[in-house]
Picture 1 (cartoon, rainbow, N blue to C red):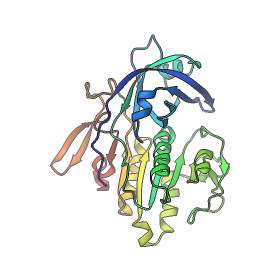
Picture 2 (cartoon, rainbow, N blue to C red):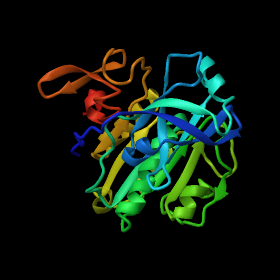
Picture 3 (cartoon, one colour):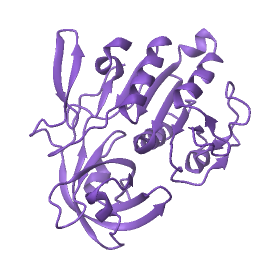
Length: 295
């Protein structure tokens, strides 16, 4: 799977809050009018957002959706410290300065027939963005989206009307937005949520992969974003089934534009280990380059 090597221009703009909705588990959906960012955002892009005037340190936020015609982007975040706590207090009409879009995206075309998109927690937004991109650019494909969360999902669960072979009986909970788009999705959690798979996202993915014949399995490729432990497990799954896999890494960032190298991680290449910055050299990487034990 060839990774795109195109980098967008990074814009700085004052984004106006259009909508700000609270969900259980201290989660928030934020819609910002940010026309330059919206026009150039791609699945896997993120912004570096100033959460409050008195907090100069910005916070990286993945983009969940972008409408280049209307000029808005959607951000899903969870309160995790002073910055996001102050961000949660922003109201419609407030201005928030941001840098964006930043980072190399997921693969943007030439997909296999069955893209498997796996998101966990705050790693859900890039997966939704990628699913929408596939829907708009490759309508004949049959993607499956699997999402996991150990806090309430930031949307009302809906029983799916889209049948999926290989999914255990009773696992019917889906994300309404994806369901409306005609994209199959299923949810996983250890919290006993109705209709969800009782276990990890990789366990549910394994059920589905085991139901496929060798020819069908060859048509699968994996894309994932979430906590590092989850990404490691997804990478191992891809290795076991000999599937290409791209992962979007989560990392603490200071500048987010490649200057400070505070988000650098070790990447394994054919020439040996190399340090790459998650912000501008990623956040999307080939899974085997991050987790060589899965290579």
